[in-house]
Length: 552
Image (cartoon, rainbow, N blue to C red; front, side):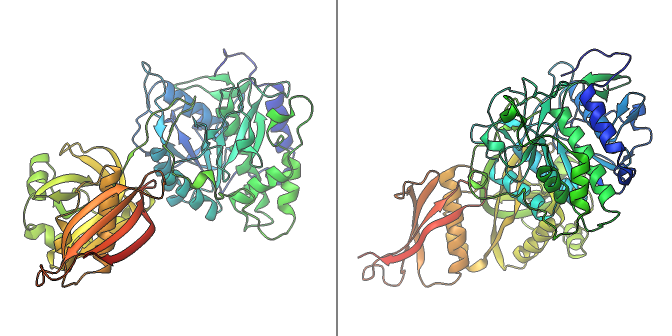
């Protein structure tokens, strides 16, 4: 939210915090040596506010920003890194890593991103060695629980000691926003210029123990394509808190070079000024105290890096993923898939050539040679899962583990060419449509790749190909587990069934595969392999079984 420009920008509370931080001689480094990832709309790099900023090349998820998204991204980034006559950011010497997650243009405003896109952006920030990650946005969710993939990536941030700072949201209620409600994230609410919480700033039990309030009104920030204006809201309060965190981390490292981003978050939480008065509950965990936080960081102690950490409970549950935006609108999350099919690869610069290559029964000599020589990370490669000789899904490894997943695929297809593997199983998310082929794009989960041994070929005819429904995912996973356990057997599979789970667990299915002895069809009964599979997460799990028994 933005007010009209004025000759003298910035409210009392903003300048008070700025003076407090600048009065600390140890903080003269102004964030130098600290990398901050800014997950937002694209920013106007040509704005004078960033003339001296150390900005890395930006990343994109699926978004391309325009209009309101650029305005939001520019203002947020300037409150962290910007310089100008009316103030600017608290960490102008920090290194900025812009990652675009919000799209939109002047006609539609800011388009939200999915939790899947946010997880991808966080993985990119981790891969680029960001120490602080600013998320000036979020999406309302009654549970406050992130999607399983987002929860997993947030846990990875916590393990790496990375500070994730996110806006509590602007709904003006005791209502949780994702990702700010996650225990491993520092949630930031907004204060008006008189020190009371903004009427629009969220609060509630979901933020207990990992939240603070920061100045969030009359904040002087850059306007896209020139000029400065005053802004208000939790998005901009979050940017101010991230800038202060970078400034504290840079300064405290003069004495304690081992400090990490998460240590600064713990310092801010432990030293916050306690909330007072009738508004205390909406102050969240208190307000920022730069001097006390720096003193805490300067005191030698075992690095805590973890008073803010993901825990069990809602964050681990499999939830329908809400979308995230600067203002909290929502949309659907990506579709989960557990596919089993043959692997194919092509290398071509045009659509027709790519599809034709993917449908070849055997690879061209050029493709085979390039993979064997390890040139698989060069541009122009397309991976697919094929059924009946035709591609059904395009595999597109990306994120922090894109290289590892691509290497795995290269090894798997060589096993397939050598006759050692007959199928591969891939757990992941549908994330759009492939431009060249028009097929759905499947983004593999790092731990969701498995090769079927050649001896399990008889089971392959029972698989459900793309595995896009809960029933199909359960059966494909059960068959993959069975293929890995029984690669050689005198028995042959006869049938496979999937029924609702008798355990009463949501999104779980009872799978059963029947085997017969081809040499004793009339005298021997059938052997049944049975397991209950939970498909609520992207990686299915067996929650009961497997059990084996004979029928008469």
